[in-house]
Amino acid sequence: MAHHTGAIPQKDVKTFAIVTRVPGGRVSPEDLERIASVARNHKVPMVKLTSGQRFMLIGIPEKDLSAVYQDLGHLAEKETAPCVKYVQSCLGTETCRYGVQDSLAVGAVLEEKYRIMPFPAKIKFGVSGCQRCCGESWIRDIGLIGTPKGWTVVFGGNSGRRPSPAALIAENLSTGDALDLVSRLLEYYRKNANPKERTARFLERTGMDRMRSELLTLLPYIPIEAAKQG
Ligand code: SF4
Image (cartoon, rainbow, N blue to C red; front, side, top):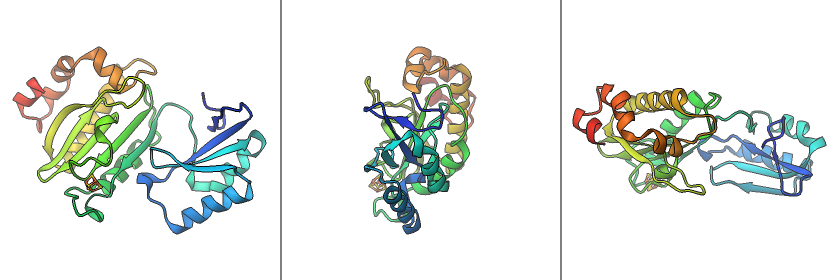
């Protein structure tokens, strides 16, 4: 459980970690200098990249938390209410020669729209610019995968203690339709999930049949047959 400041308690029960918000894992030289300067000035024992493409400053005493947050400024992230932990995006069309969809741009839209929205449990996004799936989309709560025909959207993936690949929800969507589908999936999850129930467990309990009949069959960009059969 996070400290009331949003810092994460460490194994030694004396110190804390603070994570940074660096959307898509993209940082400017100024961001890097700021993180380095905070780590140096506060004698932070360890700085580590997390699997969610964030920096974690580890081993901070409680008395220094407020000053570290202040010095990190816009880079500081607080782990408080269940909400979006991160949007993991690959390089996509911007620089990767295999990219067929702009994963960084879509990841940035998702980050901006959902970053402070509360959910029943934490939400992780994975956005990949092609089917090689470097954004690990199939094991995230919401995954988007670029193909030459548009976006594939998957839901309910998890890589934790009980790993589950996400369920395929729709394929060949425009960016606008993919973002609309993400919004409807998250709203459906928000309304129907139990507190602390991750999307994978929610999907197991609810079942695709119910989600199809209550949500997917109503969406004009999902072919009726696909909505019926998944
Ligand atoms: S998923 Fe595709 S576009 Fe994204 S980094 Fe990997 S190879 Fe490149």
